[in-house]
Image 1 (tube, one colour):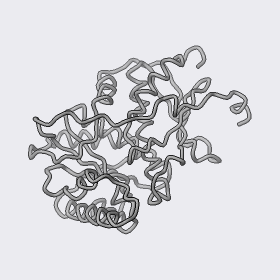
Image 2 (spheres, helix red, strand yellow; image 1 turned 120 degrees about the vertical axis):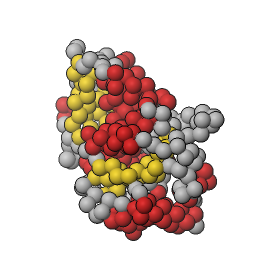
Image 3 (cartoon, helix red, strand yellow; image 1 turned 135 degrees about the vertical axis):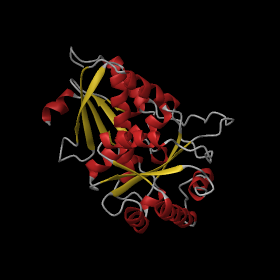
Length: 298
């Protein structure tokens, strides 16, 4: 990068941490490019593994999560990210351009960045210890700051959500080339005996930008929860079936927002072993070389 910007080594260090972001089915559908004065994020549609995501909702959601992870990482390293989302209408796969300006890291920046390495998907049942209302309020505020709505599913809404999860699991169980490992499917079907709270992330629109922002909100929720010691697990299976997604929209979000992801949140057993780290693609595999001729042609 030019003078006055972080050097390439710093950027690559930030990217290496950012790509620890969660992605649906661990597809990691992102590509990066370090340019003269910015970092570019593109969606890689070839990473799709399922025909159920014909609108690329899961792909864009996952890229939103890695974008937020990058913003947090840069903030902790002393750089504030200035993001232009979907900057090129002619290229919908160009999801964001990230510019950088000097920034004094706050304690929150450092704490959330540290949470990136500790966060993991925990599909086990959670304990009966209640999640304090203040914690739920905090993750709701953090989601709102990213442009999304977070709704706690309680009573009848929780029942509707659990029914949708079971219906999705049963439908996919009979499909050839089953997408989910048994442990992941069990997480869907075992929600009710579990004491997890169920949070639904929604957006007022359902376009590509909204899904990108929903992914950023998902990242904010997961890192906040990790920072305060809570376990989390992201579920999208019931939202991949249009009829079930409509049911969640009406039954949980009162019809005024579009559901983009479901998050289980709660306390893991204190005696539980640490969760294994999910494999990630090497940064060299997701980083495109910078071509200044191509940039001038755009």
